[in-house]
Length: 359
Image (cartoon, rainbow, N blue to C red; front, side, top):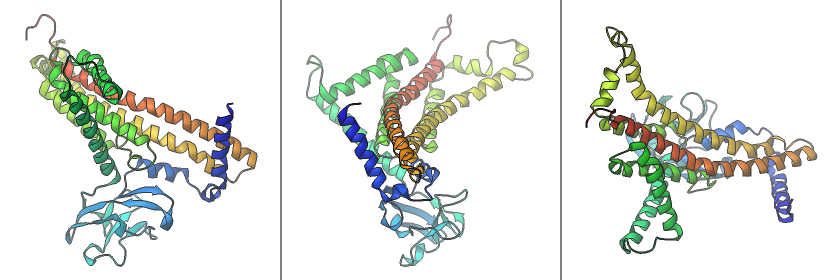
C-alpha cells in the first residue's frame, strides 16, 4: 500500500479511536441511518443533544388557534416520556400545545394534542431542494450568458461551460432524440430539466454537510411529483393510435367484449409506468444513502471490542465507505439518465404511429 495512503488511513483510525462518541455505549446504527434519510424540521450538522449544532428551519402550521410562523428552535431538544418534543416554556402562548412526535406513525410530524396539524413548513428536504434549484439556475444562466457573448461560428467552449454542453448534447442526442423520435425538440426542455434537476440533487446529496446532505430524490414525495409530471406529459402527448391501443386494441374480440380484459390491463398500464419511475428513483437513491451512512457505523458498533478487531473492522469500514461513495457518484448520473430515458420512451410510445397508418 502507498505510504501516504497508509498514513492517511492510520490518522483516520486514530481520530475515530480517540473520539469519545466512538466508544459510547448504546449506539444505534438504525437511528443514525434513519436520521439521515428521513425529513426533519431542522438541519442537523454535528453532535448530539444540547451540544449538537443544528440549523433551525421555518415552521408554518395551522392549528386550532390559527396560522403560526416560527422557528423550529422553539421546540425542546429532548422528547418526553410520550415521545413528544414540546414547544419550550418561554415560547409564545399561541403555539403552546404544539409538539414534534418522535415515535409512532406520526414520527417527525408536528402534532397538537396527539393529532396532526396542517403543515407547510420548510423542512430539510424542501430547504435543500430550494438550494439545489438555485444552484442549477445559476449554472444554466451562467452558461447561457457565455453563449450570448459568442457566435455559433466561434470555437466550442471549454472548462465548465464545455462540460455542461457535453452533458446537454449527450442527453439530447443519445437519450431524448432516440426515445421520443420525430418532434423531440418540444419535449427536450422538460426532459433536460428532469435530468439536470435529478442529477444536481443526487450529487448534492453526497456532500455530508450544508448546503448538501439532503436526501431529496430519496424522498418519495419528490419522486412522486416527478413521475406525475411525466404522466401528464405522456397523456397529453398521446395520439389517437395510443388511445385506441388502450381501449380497443388489435386482439380477438372476445378479449375486449363483453368482458374488457385487455383494455383493463392496458388502462392499468397507464399508471404502472409512472409508478415504476417513482419507485425506481426513490428506492435506488434511498438505498444508496442508507448503505453509505451504514458503512461508517461499523466503527462505532465494534468500538467496545478488542483493539485488533476495532482497528481491522475500522479499516474495512473506511475502505468500504470510500468504495460506496465512488459508486454513489456513478449512481447519481445513472439514475438521472434512467429517469430521463424512460420518460423519453414513454412519450415516444404515446406519439408512435403504427406502420401503414398516416399521421
